[in-house]
Image 1 (cartoon, rainbow, N blue to C red):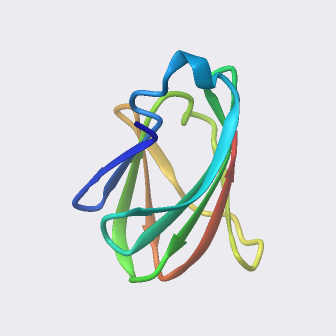
Image 2: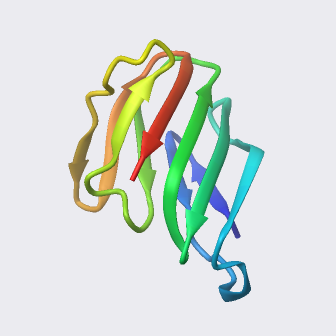
Length: 101
């Protein structure tokens, strides 16, 4: 399983098969009108793009390796995300968000 979503939360790579140690995917739809594209190496996220179609007051990302992620909106502005309790949380008006790990 590559993603799991519920409410305004998206879990990234919750059950990645060990045979897929390195890879990428795009065009996966998550709840809340969100499209996900991501790359991973050695079973760890390296890049993530979220296309958010509807304003989301508090979008929550969960998964391994999110601590220290740096996010930017489509204009290159830094995303003010907070990492707490193993979750990355940020305000996500409709738009495109890129994260690097």
